[in-house]
Length: 393
Image (tube, rainbow, N blue to C red):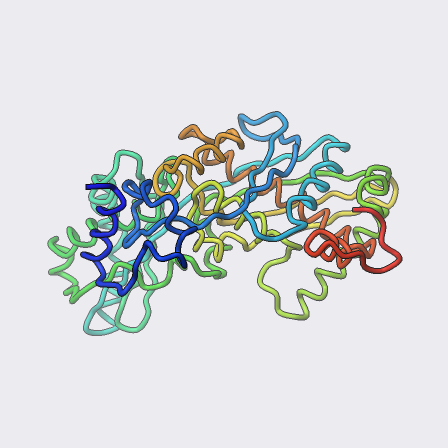
C-alpha cells in the first residue's frame, strides 16, 4: 500500500470527511502528503507553505552569545524582512545589540472546588504544608521539570492553584499539564483531600493565561523573560534610517502617547511581526503569540550626544528548542540558522527574538518619522511608486 493511500485511509477512518484529498483544488496542500507520517496533528492532509525571508546580519551579544546572526522570518508581509534588515544595519553601525535573560518559567493553574468559601480558605492556608509533596509528585513526571512556585488564589468556594515550573529546554506547555494533572490526582488521594474535603478539580482555571494576553503574564514570566537594548548615533541614524535621532525619539514618544490614550496593552512599535515570523519558522506554538507579544519599549534620548538608546522588555516569550514543532526538519534548520539548534539554545532563542524585535521597532518608527512608511509598503507590496517626499528605503 502506498503512503498516499495509507494517509487517505487514515483520514477517512478518523473523521469521515466528505473530502477527496486528490482533488485538483488541494493539489498544493497535499503535494507532500507522503511526508506526513511523522506529523503529530490529527487528520493531516499535507502542508501550507509560508515564505521565509532572511533578515540581518545583526551583531548580538548576550549570555554565551557573541557574533553576527541572521533571522529566518516566515511571513507573507512585504517590507518586514527589508525593514528588519535596515534596523539591523543601523545597530551594527553602532556596536550591535545586547540581551540578558532575567527569568524563565511555565505555568499551569488548576482549580480545586469546595463546598464553601470557608473550606477554600482553610485549604489555601494549608498549601505550604503539602508544597514539598506536590513538588515531588509533579517532578516525578519528568527529569527536567522543577516546581518553582505554588500559590493559591481564593475565588468563591474554589482555590486556583498557580503552579510555576522550570522546564529545561522545552517551552513546557504539555510538560506542565502532565505534571500538574498527576500532582492533583495524587493530592485528591492524600490526607489533605480528606481533611479539607476537596470535591473536584479541573486542570486549568485561566489563572495561567495560556495563549491569552494578561497582566498576570507581565507580572510573572510564562516563558522566558528577556531584555534587549542598543544605542543609535545621530550620524548612523541619518545615514541609514533617513532621520535624526531626535526626530526618531519624538516619533516613538508620539506613538507611545497615542497608545496610552487608546488603552494599548503594552508599549511597542511592531514586535508581534517578529515574534510570529520566528515562531512559525522555528516551530514554536503560534497560538502563544497572543501572550508572547506583550512588550515594553523604552526610548531614552541624550540631548548632549544625540544618541538614542532603545530597550525592549519581554516578560513571557514562550519558546523552546526541543519537542513539538521544533522537531521538524525545516524548523530545525531555522533554529540552526539562529545558533539555537542545540537543546541549551532556549535562552539564546528568546534573546535573538528580542534583539531582532528591537531592530524592527527602530526601522518601523523611522519609516513613520521620515514619511516613507506608506511608500515602502506600496512599493514592496504592489510595485507602486507613491508620494513625492519619500526617500529610498
